[in-house]
Length: 85
Image (tube, rainbow, N blue to C red; front, side):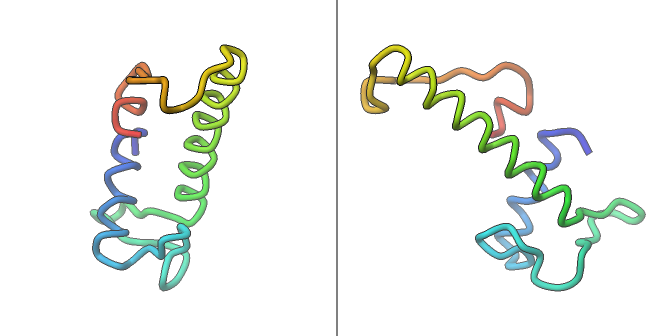
């Protein structure tokens, strides 16, 4: 899966109740998408790590600029993955 596809798959899994809010799969270690493609617990964890890295980068930039989140009207991230996350 590409990054934006991973974001979509996890979003649908959450909506369907197949993924818990914390990111754990409700049953087993895999969520079938379109056989033979599956979403694994590792895939979800990698997405969580990427989201956390982006959030940390934003916090570091805010700190560097001496700005508060409320002072930022927009954050632009490059690429399809940045667009979806």
